[in-house]
Image (cartoon, rainbow, N blue to C red):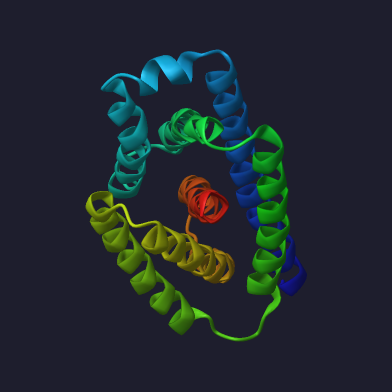
Length: 213
């Protein structure tokens, strides 16, 4: 029975990582095509840029609040749509940074994410307290970011980015442990599929936010 549980846990976590990695890959491809085709310049030069920037948040809210009402197929479709729209939003990075610097940052983030997620999966220490602290810190940097829209302080922006890296690094380890422990309470194959997609969304957001920070 223990071996069957461990095998099921591995399949469950592998499914989450596969969805998360596929979502990141889709976002990267969309960002690259959107930027190099000139569509990003055309869109971000108009009020449509706010639609592109805010649409990912709308998808996250629909998926989170509609989890119990949505079918697993609909939830998966929303995840792929979210990943594509997020790629459009991330295409603005190509206005500021060079391709090699973006690639170097991506691979550095991927290496850090892999190490932190492995730590969260294997550690015997309960990370709940750290996770709660990191979530409070997340709200703090969101508020600071909104304030800095008016202040436009380079020093504050640097501090927000620095704290963002630390916070999302901690959340990566915490979310991995949370998803691992959640496996024991998943009921039914349909709900298990939903948990996999939402787990992938959590790790996707940790990765992308750590990358942008």
